[in-house]
Amino acid sequence: MRTQVAIIGGGPSGLLLSQLLHRKGIDTVVLERKTRDYVLGRIRAGILETGFVNLMREAGVADRMDKECFVHDGTVISHGDTQFTIDFKDLTDTSVVVYGQTEVTRDLYDAREAMDGTVIFNAENVQIHGADSDAPHVTYTTDGDEHRIDCDFVAGCDGFHGVSRQTIPLTVRREYEKLYPFGWLGILSETPPVHDELIYSCSSRGFALCSMRNENLSRYYIQCSLSDSPDDWSDDAFWQELKRRIPSEYADKLVTGPSIEKSIAPLRSFVTEPMRWGRLFLCGDAAHIVPPTGAKGLNTAASDIHYLYNGLIQHYLDGDDTGIDTYSEKALARIWKAERFSWWMTNLLHRFPDQSEFDLKMQAADIAFLRDNRAAQTVLAQNYVGLPY
Ligand SMILES: Cc1cc2nc3c(=O)[nH]c(=O)nc-3n(C[C@H](O)[C@H](O)[C@H](O)COP(=O)(O)OP(=O)(O)OC[C@H]3O[C@@H](n4cnc5c(N)ncnc54)[C@H](O)[C@@H]3O)c2cc1C
Image (cartoon, rainbow, N blue to C red; front, side, top):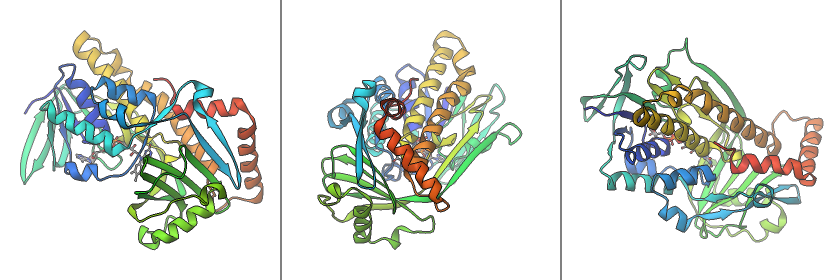
């Protein structure tokens, strides 16, 4: 088989790139290790920046999102029993939207199918060959049969555990990582959200987040120990702990119910440099991870796709390689700022096992400054709604 761009990974990054390029007449093949149902079963991000929304519109897959998403003009931050709102709209004239990653991925799969885009599921043992040559190719197996795709470029959109990053030699690749000493226990429940905005809560018992997907689907998280397993937490124990960590005004009216999904995500900051090696380009979680506190994971994946998509259009339609030659530099400049923001939000709102009394006072002062200072709120809002591409 031959294609112009071989895309490894059929998550949101790979599908969005494939859909955008197809609409410009650029041929792609997406290789996905799992099944479509498996990918759609992963409950992950839910807050989309305007840049992401605009890319979905450009990809022609925004109809359902535009109808069903919820626009959020602000968010609540609480510390103990005090709380305040960061008004994104007032501070930046921009909002974010709530629309689940599952829905984004479903819309992209439907669009790929409607356009007869090639997505190969259950692609095992994917390997990238000759990425540093002028003629790369990718091999993979399905049902025990080996296949080969010759291509001009390879887009590595295969997430943190994928093969693409590992293809870049260690002599070229440099990795930066920070692991946090806790995780997030998250549940999804078919209950109305406790509030119409997200609530980020810093409490003496640890962090909690009240989020949502729609009017009758709520997503709640509590900071937990890395040694915990979801089975250690009954639904009842989760709800009780959540209520202890959020202001009583919300705890009193929280509607609880059975969880329909429960999982623990460890928190990690990670960046690999460079994001290009020869004809291989890394995008999304394949190149970087953020702790979810700033809602940046999916949104940083989208900004990578924006830079790569535009670089590839320039290459194919104008014969100009400037975009692909500056891809890594441009993508990383934005990524590092999102990394800083996510790290800062995580430090601001979580309890760390080694925090001293002094550290706790610093954290309280930081939050009080944010509550009372419009400039500090503006900085948070600018980062949360997304820095410009
Ligand atoms: C548990 C969890 C919770 C999260 N919660 C949030 C959140 O609340 N907010 C937020 O902003 N972000 C969140 N994120 C991050 C966000 O989901 C990711 O940033 C986003 O999924 C990145 O998209 P991606 O397409 O780059 O990678 P992925 O979504 O990881 O997709 C990569 C795809 O590549 C496939 N693949 C992997 N290896 C291979 C291979 N060798 N060959 C072929 N295919 C392969 C995988 O099966 C997968 O479908 C969360 C992430 C996790 C893991």
